Amino acid sequence: MQVFLKIKALDPVSERGKRRVYQGLQTAEGQQVLRHYDVTPKNSVLNALYKRTAFDGPSQTLRVSNFNLAGHKAPKTATHLGVTLGILDFDFDSLESTLTVSPTRFLEIGAGPSSFELVPDLLRLPAHTGIVLLGIRYYEVIANEVYGLETLRGLKILPHATG
Image (cartoon, rainbow, N blue to C red; front, side, top):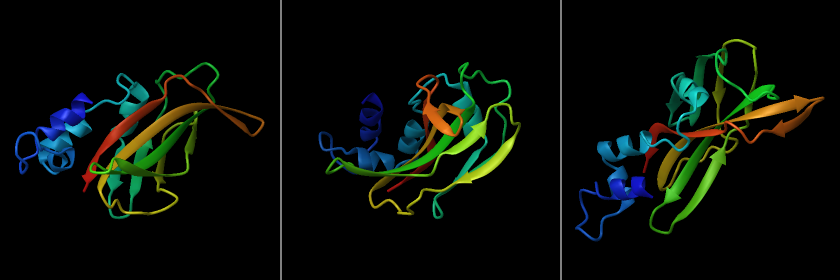
């Protein structure tokens, strides 16, 4: 909530008492505040993955280049890391939202560097304020059964906001 109040205070067009988050997000400083907000702080895997990403807004494609899980702590039973792209379209007036997500890309623990792309199943350009999200979760795969683990999950806002 503090992040959105800070962004709302950056609204350059509305008078005091009527400022809006949407208007604050239209500023470079507002977008910077949002990008630097750690949804799940202190997640070394998520931060390392983030450094290997580039997001293309028009095609809604997240490109990950040469990401390597080696050297990062994983839960004992984890066999894979799942990576997902989400695009949240949020209307700050009505407080309604839609979220489109990509299929999860599974990276096998110990497999070495990997490059890949993530694209949502449904391409829909945001009609309001678009917020791009990068999510990770560890999984254990046993005989083609996939089990999501609850530890070391992470979510990060990527440097691209639309509105």
